[in-house]
Length: 505
Image 1 (spheres, rainbow, N blue to C red):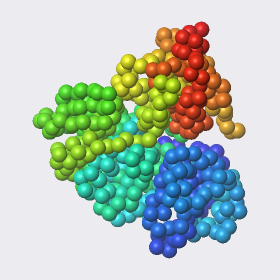
Image 2: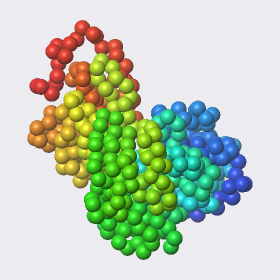
Image 3: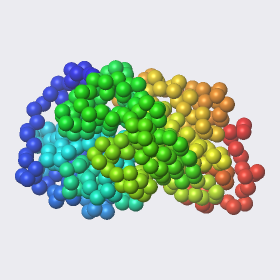
Image 4: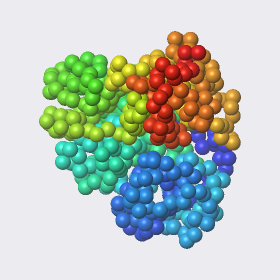
């Protein structure tokens, strides 16, 4: 992994922060970047714990902005040093902040106590708990949410902190009353003053390791560098801890081999400790037979599509069996899981077009999401609409992988967000080259310059019966709602035969 000295402006990152006051000495907490998924969830937990919470962010969009407002948490939709007057007892600094961020800089200049998000989560909520850290390149949000739901359904009342909003309960975190606390463990850096992966702060008693595939090319040099972060996480497990590892993943197996504590593997491979027998996909999910150590545990239903979600469910079952949950408890928990927002979430249907939202941005996540969508809507035309928004997902090293990720789509639209002021365009892939590569595989693909250009093109291309699968790890200009509204108001006189399909050109 990179050392602190390897980052630009390292001299700014080596300041000494005043120690954070004890949790019972804090009243007023300010969060810089409060509308991010993780920061917003932390704000909700702090609010639930009785602290006065406020903050700021440059962009506020659903679902987190709505959750914060619903709980009476106020925030500014801009950054200004004046927002920290009067000074809070503690400032929590999101990892999007740079050393020169106006609010971060004033907090540093005035020697205000500061913590990163993972430090704050550990400081306030994990010290007296039994943390279960769900980590991995893919699947950690759904797996963590599913685990929290299954434990709650079994009456264990866990705390949880996940990077997505649970459908139905409309929450992404809760303190809970039992020793169990489920944490989605992110391998991205903690803050500008702490470049360690977030999950190294979480004091794990157990780790569920879902996958390890190179990601975050803006932070890690290569797969070996990336894998080392997960090795460090597993090394934090106590002697009486538990590692639940995805046995189908060779890099996960490599990390797990070094662990000397209790290990349980899961996967679709028959050599795993926990696996499946028969699987029956349906429109609303999948039925499967669960096997543990070669014996049948029972037949279960998971209301999620895709083999990747079946693996997520196996991870939860493996953990549940290890801590003594019964087959009946697992069955009830899995079958009643409402899902996570932005994971193949149907946002609505208008003009005969189903509009679906998904968080996928890594090439593997895009591929698996499309496979799951194809399983769920096998008889519909599947139009993939993709925004590679993050600095990592846009890297040139993923260019070839993206050309191969859309094979289950019937048509593809790409929209590249604008470069930020400090980006180096030569580091990022060429969307026109990706579209050409997709077309070379026999799938129509087009590029739009931005959302404003994309929306009218989609209205021309989409027709009744289509599924419009929109994938981005950001708001994508609120494309989902704008598309639904435009489809609703589109002239009813335009039939599919009269519509212009740019893919046919």
